[in-house]
Amino acid sequence: MQTINRDTTITVGTSSVEIAPLRSSRVVIYITNTSTTAQKITIRKGETAGISGEGLSLNPGDSWYESDGANFRCWRGPIQAISDGADGTLAISEEMVI
Image 1 (cartoon, rainbow, N blue to C red):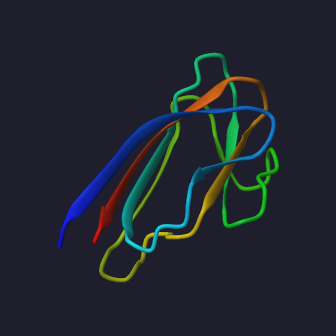
Image 2 (cartoon, helix red, strand yellow):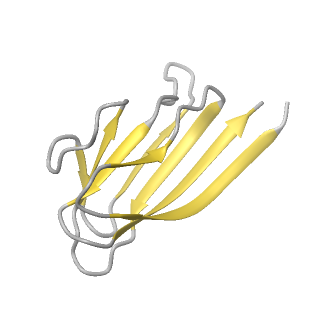
């Protein structure tokens, strides 16, 4: 097996954007709101476009994390995000095993 890492920063505005595509090999995902001007970013699992305030809301400095464990499987589907203001930013780290 081989481990592949993806580390990136994504700008998120007031329109929904896919921040992580479907990855059947994802075993870890870590998302942090790195916005510097108080943008709250909402993330939503699945294909449906993100709606501000409907889903997991991250204030600047907040993070969301999932990983495979003994009784839990990391979300492997797509993830959407939307910000309540322009120019929000997310740092995203993923680990995939193929």
